[in-house]
Image (cartoon, rainbow, N blue to C red; front, side):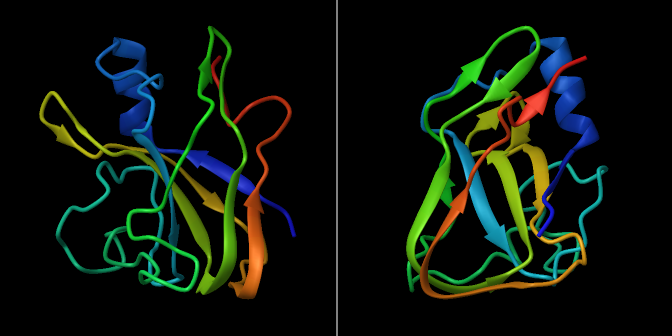
Length: 149
């Protein structure tokens, strides 16, 4: 199972301009999203209200069975000039079917409500991930979640 992380274009623009930072403890979230979502680097916010394949929040897995709505807080944030990193994220006893993880900021920055950071394709086939009561760990790369160039 290969994992691919893709950065959303708008988020990078906000980071480089200094309008948004990745150091807000408790506000970087990782949500699990079904194959109903069709990721695009042009998507900008967690819940655009379109209730379709372009709306990650609309396609989030349901609450319960080891998962909480809006995802898990990404802890242990670390940002320097070259990378953004954090502690691994673990869901315990997870029973869900999903395809993507979506990183976003759970807050409003200027006029941007819950800006998207990046999405993760967990299986490059692509195929759904099916969990039936097991622990699911998102282990970030040793070089960080996102590298800046």
